Image (tube, rainbow, N blue to C red; front, side, top):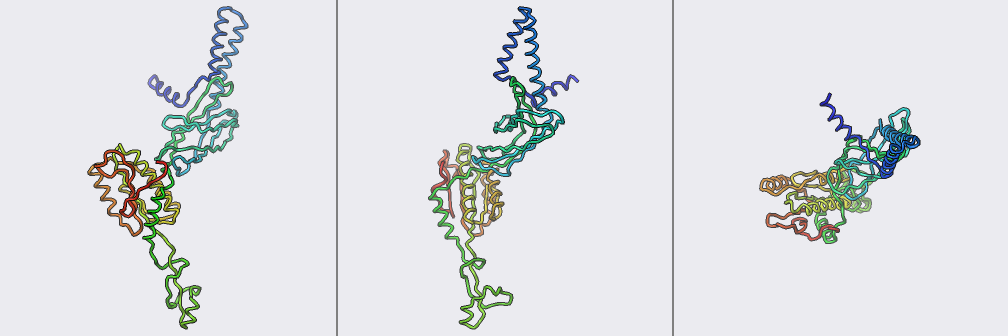
Length: 372
């Protein structure tokens, strides 16, 4: 039994804490003064006042503890959030007691042992009831944001003490790199490269691609009647596929520790390029270090690419790392389209950070993103 007490005390202190408020401190000082006066004078009125004040302190602790007992929390986080862009989370708080309500609850997210104030409060939670609250939060760095749980605090009933209880409600969310408008010079480079990659091919569209003789099974709606009347032969109109440009974006992950800030800029630039080219209808492939995605488009593919960029890590330069990344990316065949390389470090000759390097189809383009 003696061996279990330290663990019990440690666990209790981790899940419960009490802090005296400024009003509570004044009340305690006044209580001490009344106690000293009662002892020195022996006046029964002072003893009655002291007993009342001590009972208020005891009641404050007991009621606050009862307000925090048997609460249940469930949190829902979005799948993806973007750095410096507000996102919404929802939290359900339920009072599992059958007879006593909870009052004046302040709710905090807990991450890395720190209380994060989201401004969430519940003034009254009846017994057996639950409350759904939604609150905004802002992520300031990319990666995976872990939340350890929820801390609920109350100053009820007299505001003398701030009592807190911790509820382990673990959760995590992927934080994507910040997306910033691209530089005009870089946009011009992308536009010229995209025009060079346009291919004329048969497919669904509105422009004329070819005229040919009718074959069994062809759609009668595609018959080109002016040519049919002129040649007395059924002629079918083939259309040209609408423009569908392809692009491969490579992000080099090898950079020394001195280039950490520049590497984060490179990740943000790659995310901005993905966002821009997806909005322009490109079919995108992303290569991050030795990892690569398939070609694709659409919202689901866009989120997959953002997730790759959110979780990528800078790797220190070494012969083994550099060789493995170069070998793993060389095997990926570029099936036509624009190839864009973004790198924060150009090699051993670059000792101090000099900025990003962007190559479009092997040609270096100056410009990057606004705000860096």
